[in-house]
Length: 295
Image 1 (cartoon, helix red, strand yellow):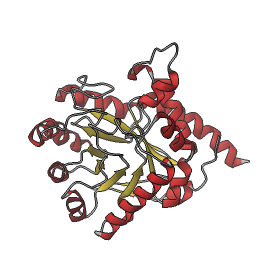
Image 2 (tube, rainbow, N blue to C red):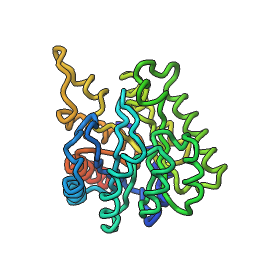
Image 3 (tube, helix red, strand yellow):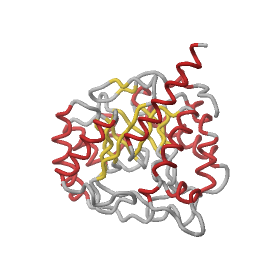
């Protein structure tokens, strides 16, 4: 496997609202979907009590961060009205911020960003990389919140109808550099920024695996990389046998394998559904790397 070349450059803390997160070792971001139509677990945790119990379970299994989303961004997803997104998020967030663990909210709407930051969340995880009108202003006005900037080709309703053309690595690296520059130009400290290549967001299966193979190139941007491979359709394509594509929940082993490959290529944060299995795989990886560095 490829060595984690350049990882030391991303070992600086990730500044967030309440926490400076040490990324010298990979962190697990556990996914909490409050949506009835998520591609992977839609509807399972849409009720607040269920979602809170699921979040507690993820923390007990080894999650370092909780990433909460109330609007699906799967291919073909229809945008959710603002009031409905806030109504789904409010009871969960107001309870979860009392736990003193880092809370990330997956949203692209500036009004939602402002509301959840007012409620005390730590990270804004934006598939639009702060390109929606007003989003950059909300984040720039906040003194500390962490931000994840993701590459997405087109938008969720259309991103798989006409996928990215050309060299995917160059396109993603150039886009993320531009968004880094835009955020810093608005006064957002670089220590607040993490980058996500956007696996599955307007890319072909081959392009997704090209991004994984060449992920270390993104370390040239000198910011931590977040890898979001969990249960993605590219894994389903790789696992297809006799025309049978495994359902998202059946892609657990492949998701853990992709997560470890991403870590080997410098990923600092792993956004996953299967926290326990990912934590166990990382424990094996750490045991190996500790012995390798002790020689």
